[in-house]
Length: 272
Length: 273
Image (cartoon, rainbow over all chains, first blue to last red; front, side, top):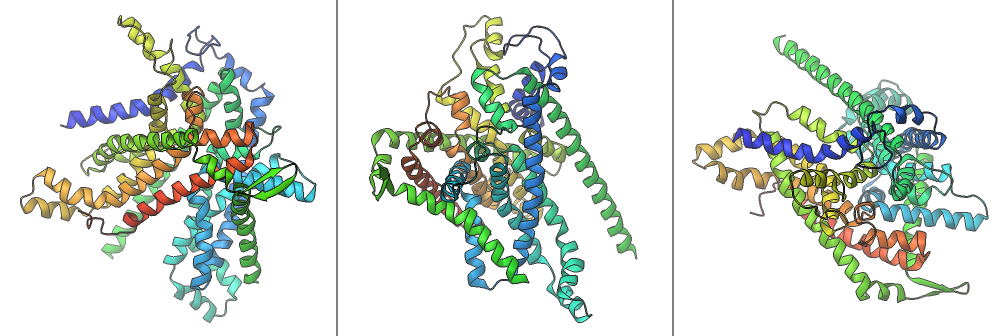
């Protein structure tokens, strides 16, 4: 029975990792044609760093992910605190509207934002699609995710400590900074990571809102797919795969160390 | 001071959530001829023409098949990993997350190399002396691409809920003489049902709307509802019809969400059985 379980898991992982293995394997392929092995080479890795189109797309992807997650965390956290303090009827309305983008299909979000931009450009006879529309769209779809990762944390917060701080003479803004913010920080970080991941992986919304001159990696790959993907992209994604593995491994390891530390502390407290 | 922040968020929300949807609705219910815009239901009548209804039904059909397969593959995986005697579960969970950080287009595209006429599977078949088979550009290929992309969305919620099950409930069932299958049927599965429902929603929604998978693996031969919308906006530039299709799609999604939210909010989870 145990063997069957292991074989079953192995098969599922084979299914999940087969395309990635193929991708990495063919990044070392000297032949340009897909699926035809022409010998080992590191050429694509060298050429990757001299390709302005790919580097530009990489820069756009990373900078949009970074800026959009940073800005959406700012907007989302402030909004979450405001929403939390609202009275029930207004709160429900705002929450339900904020929930719409979470349920909405990507393609509808993309299309509706595109219409919004066209409408604004038309109305003001000013502006065009480009980096800014891309960034703005990413912020727009990230904000609700941040709000819904911060709100539960606020709800679990003990409201007495905030009032205690006020009683001890702290101004509301000081208490907010010293009491509320440190308490909700983990949720804010989760929101940031979530927003960053969503932004870096997004294709559909970017595709509809970026305009013709500005590419991110997903759009570049999509436009390449018709004429055949450049092996340089394979090389780039192999490198990115390596980064992700190392990064996630480090985060995981840190978590394990932390949880061990916490357990130890817990044990000590129990002994006392 | 606080009011300023609140009103700015409400303004932001109106600009980026409410107005876009109103605009979609506006385009869906109008037509323009020679610069004159007028109200009409013509766009919706067109959506219900046979050609487009077929596209909609095909999308829902493929997405349902994909969801079912994800459930059948994913539940056992989550179940095996949630076993408390299973040591590698955190590492394996980590390995499930890694592919989600890779570019989805690229991973889907890599399937072409595996499945195409001179691809890896066919080369292996040829080596073994079998004749080559056509694996690409069929409905099955599209379902494969969907399952591949959305399987983790099914596994993760189910795994989390199985992990949370109080082990005493299982032990109690065993003490009362239930065999392992009865325990599963009466205790474990009902308790994981809300997670199954959220898994189903999380797989079904992206599956029904995707246009990347059919574009890459269907060779443009199979039109799904996502392709239809993309085509209306970027190739044909018939926004009115595109918006009507988008509204219908939103309706399908919200309908599905409402159905599953009934089960989802039900904390007990077991009442249905």
